[in-house]
Image (tube, rainbow, N blue to C red; front, side):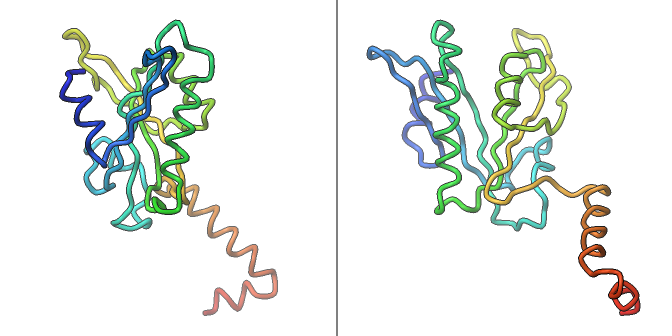
Length: 178
């Protein structure tokens, strides 16, 4: 990233940035942006259920990385845990999801996010351009603070079945009649 990017992420309140330092050297970094759901790019609009309200926000992980020699020591997990603690604090209750994009070929990162309970949301064909070549990506999402994905047909059927079951057998005819 250019130097100006690092200046932006450390001086703007809309970014969350945390570095892991060992021996005076940065060995890991996480950078996320908290933004309104309404301002998301087209490919990310379907992350949240619209019933959560127009003031809903999301956290977008721009970068999470650890120097190769320090990987598999829990540093990325610690950085991610700190971000999640930040977005689930009471004063940020409007943050309903944390999401990221990852190269579809980056199996170690995908496994890491899956272990951290992120769910695959969508496939992004030709999302990245790396050295002039188009590469596919995925969107992964973790719902927080009561956030959830838009409901599909199966979700509605399960909700209605649960509501009918809660009525009890004697009240079903009465409920239908109303």
